[in-house]
Amino acid sequence: MIKLFKVKEKQRELAAENANGKPPVKKQSAGELRLHKDISELNLPKTCTISFPNGKDDLMNFEVTIRPDEGYYLGGSFVFSFQISTVYPHEAPKVKCKTKVYHPNIDLEGNVCLNILREDWKPVLNINTIIYGLYHLFTEPNHEDPLNPDAAAVLRDNPKMFESNVRRAMAGGYVGQSFFARCI
Image (cartoon, rainbow, N blue to C red):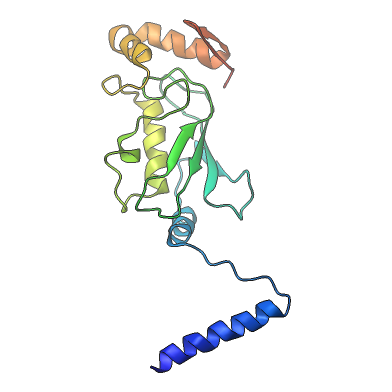
């Protein structure tokens, strides 16, 4: 009973402060609190960076840049946007690749095929896990679960041609009918 009175008293104090011209205190959602914890505990590979284009006040929208240091995509720079829901971690973040890339698991619109962003998402997973998953897509592209079936077929049937197509796309050029901006 005493705690109830203390809560009511605190609410009255806050209301009085707000009436005195002070801005109201913004209450953080559970998703924002969890995201803040995830970001403070990030342990990114040296080839990945995180930025907040809307400023540090908007933690729910950020970008991650991945610069693979091995594999087909060595030397490239790929930017991913993250949109986090207020019900995070109960709902997976929305992740899109902003860099047009020739990749079997990323389509030309930037949609990403990563199981932990869809059917295998669990609330125990975090932002660090997703970033490592994205990094893994560049070091080990998977032709068995494609979003870009053309790239997947070339990777499966002719890895040397796939490597040539990746290099051409990253240097800025056409692969088939699609133009790719330089990302090296």
